[in-house]
Image 1 (cartoon, rainbow, N blue to C red):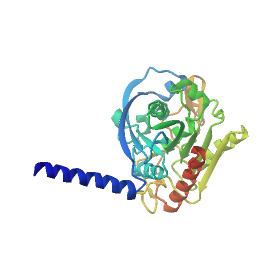
Image 2 (image 1 turned 90 degrees about the vertical axis):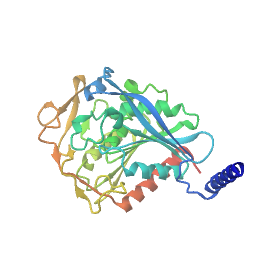
Image 3 (image 1 turned 90 degrees about the horizontal axis):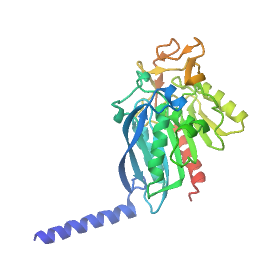
Image 4 (image 1 turned 120 degrees about the horizontal axis):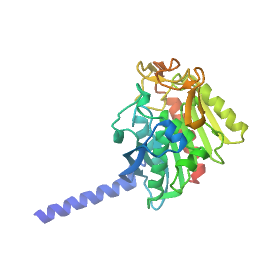
Amino acid sequence: MFGRALAIMGWIACSAAAWAQANGPKDFAGRTELHAFQSLTLSDQQFLTGNRDGKPVTLTGQLRIAQGSGRLPLVILVHGSGGMGANIEAWARELNLIGISTFAIDGFTGRGLTAVSSNQALLGRLNFIVDIYQALEVVAKHPRVDAGRIALIGFSRGGQAALYASLARFHRLWNKSGAQFAAYVAFYPDCATTFVDDTDIGANKVRIFHGGADDYNPIATCKAYVGRLRAANRDVELTEYPGVHHSFDNPLGPVPPAASPASQSVRACTVREHEGGMLINVATKAPFSYKDECVALGPHTGADLAAAQAAMRAVTGFLRQEFKLE
């Protein structure tokens, strides 16, 4: 009887697997893995000067291998100041649906953080770029990943990291993976800082998606940066969704948009990198600090289904073309 029970259980398991393969949702990952990898916690000045004398940290990434066989294209996903939110899950499933695997970096838990929205000084903003390059080294070696078809998508703080990870200077300083990204996609990034040589992104393709009503990271500063990139003949496009607020792609975001009273925004700040990797508040001519008067509170966040769907269509269409997917 016991042997027969085992046989029946095995048949049920095999039948369930066969049914899922034939009929199951394509946005389910074929396999999920958790990978630990090493990174550093640095000040922004250390990052900008290539100083590796930071605090070693072990981070984790969630690898969702799309249904399919062989080596598949992959997108690295980078969360914002609130941590791994619902939009990361939504994007992972949307990308898995079209045969693209994902690797979502958790940049907080290994550092003892859950969120930095109300105290952005808890973590230098450029740390995520180090994490990105370290994660790139991990996934580029994975037997199920096509190292020639890896793209990067980031959101808010992660969007800023995704945007500036395209800089040739930062690649030279920090990318030791031997791999390159096929494209960089940034959602509602902070573009308030001007870095040295920040128009040198080589032939990298950069795509930015932003809400016109964003008062967290206003689109105006990104328009100015995009203007400078285009003047340097770089491959960059900015898509604006009029009337749309920050984090518009988060399916659990408030509708209508609501203020986040304790969240810090640099929407009124202008920051510029000076000699020695020092970030200077242009208004005060002093080193920038989150205690500066230009740092504001209470930006709005809110979901917008139409904008989220439009952005997903645009991004998946772009990646289909870049990855040569049918």
